[in-house]
Amino acid sequence: MPSSNSSIGVSFRVSGGELDTYLSRIQQRATELSRQFIRNAEKESDVAKDNLRSYSDQLKALERKLQKEAEIKTLQAELNREAGRKSLREDIQSRRDQLDASFSRGEITKRQHRVQGEKLTQEEEKRQKEIDDRFRAELASHRDQRRDNSLLLRAMRENQDAIRTVS
Image (cartoon, rainbow, N blue to C red; front, side, top):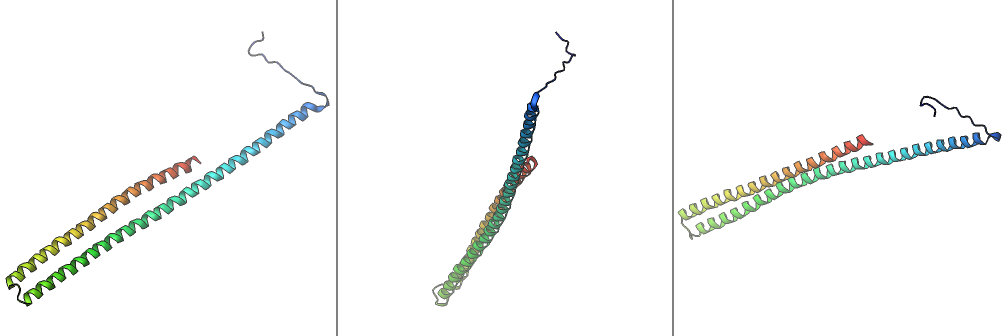
């Protein structure tokens, strides 16, 4: 039995060059397979880049959409507040006009007119505070929603960075 450090030399001799042809074909096939592997890897890389670009575009579109929605919600809250204020002013003014008319016709005394006028003022202040409180609560809710959206977008950007790093 030969020792582990010994080596054996082997040589082949083929007549007619068949072995050379066979080895040449193997080398050609290996080269073709390598080129095909490289082309496939390039295609996969292009697909990955396209997917990343698409993800990035979708993320930007989502950011714009969420920003516009936040702006719309804020404007809607402001419109609701102003509509509430206008309705309140009209209601209180109508009731003041009725109170003044009742006083002018002598249906109520000066004291009753003053007391009912003060009650209207107190009611107006109370309802105005309720309108303002609803508006502030709505804005707080919108801030919370924007914060949640911001966290979502941050996580999506981190995913995008992770995908970019891997590809």
